Image (cartoon, rainbow, N blue to C red; front, side, top):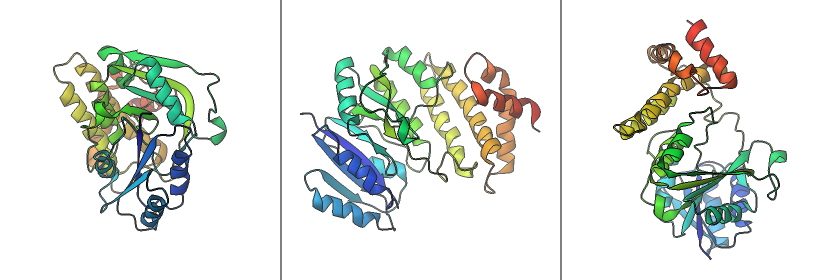
Length: 311
């Protein structure tokens, strides 16, 4: 059978690492290798990785390096991938036993370069089996780009951990070292090369709601990376038919930062001058951001508040 390589970055996750690794070891798809990329853990996670490698020498490989961040940990592991297909799993999440078998079959059935499922934040919402399955296929440059740019109010769906990739298509791509929101950048690079995506509504991945995680903290200075990521996309889309879409999403990025501050507060390290500049951008871009279905629901109310009410 075709081998699937699963990369798990590890950094100080001794309380959740076993659950993550075991969920991959217990996959119904038999031909899987696991690459544990230890990013300089200091809490005992490194030893756990070595114990797993010793116990499952034919299934698990370990890399130990000094701390360099999530992107660096994933990039190191990508150099060692030997599977024809590959995926990623964060070390505080876990997957249902049939996830990779399901994504593999979906990819084969649809002739896709990337297959993906959905995820659940509550274990009771996970989908065992295929009841209620709905699959959307995005084919060709235009459809795939529009899916990426979420032009019709689609939810953010950039994460790499609920997907299966053809290794040949992504082996030369890399996550941006030293930056967060790295999945947005990597997903953009993947979609530029992809000819067909298969997207399932089934929730086969459990996403751990870390109360102090990146997405649920108040706004911090490092969140400005989101603007840097979209600046790169805008530059790469220059002189393409999708340049306008990229610029619109760059405008949404400023709104995302301001909305995060409004909902969760902001840390002391946020530069007040920059924060005011982001709010000014939202006010100036209100017409574009509020047009059509680009921003929907509660976020639309936040947009109005930031652009028209707040000072």
